[in-house]
Structures are given as structure tokens and as C-alpha cells.
Image 1 (cartoon, one colour):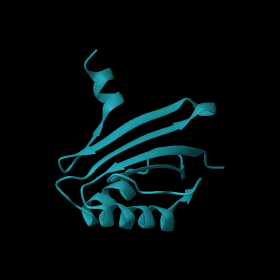
Image 2 (cartoon, rainbow, N blue to C red):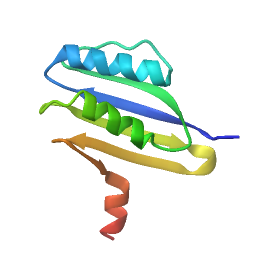
Image 3 (cartoon, rainbow, N blue to C red):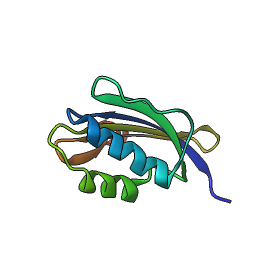
Image 4 (spheres, rainbow, N blue to C red):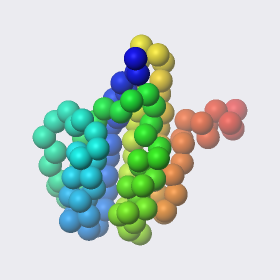
Length: 105
């Protein structure tokens, strides 16, 4: 049985229409937990994924909706199996913040 992770997704972009397109894209691929509202060029919501951070899907999303002002944060967790990840998309590139901090220790 696959583990289900919770993902907290935060999106910022100057193009509000693009944010709405991204939200719809995520809703079509994942189970979202709440009503999603876009305000002040940003939104935040939760969705479920199997196992860990859905990297392939997030890379597909950022390739499709590329924008110089697009900023995305995703915190992925599943407490029972001690999963915690923090990914940031900024300036056209994804970064794993927790792995980067551990590598620098």
C-alpha cells in the first residue's frame, strides 16, 4: 500500500490567470483538501500525493506554465514514515532546501 503524503503548495506569480491555470492543473491530477482562492497574485492550498514530493509532475507543471515571476514552494510530509521535504521553484529551477542544508553540514 502506498503512503499518502500531504503537500502544502504556495504559488506566487504576477500573472493571476497563470496561477488559476496552475491550480486547475493540480486539481486535475491530485486530490486537493480545500477550497482554493487566488488573492494578491498568490494562493496556498494542500493536496495529497503518493509517497514523496511529486517531482515529475511539478517539473511538468513548471515547464508548461513557465513565467519569470513564478515562485512555488512545496512542503511535503508524512509523519508516520518521517517524510519531510521542502522544494522551491524560483528563476526556472527547482531546489530541495532540506537536502541542500544537510549537504552543507
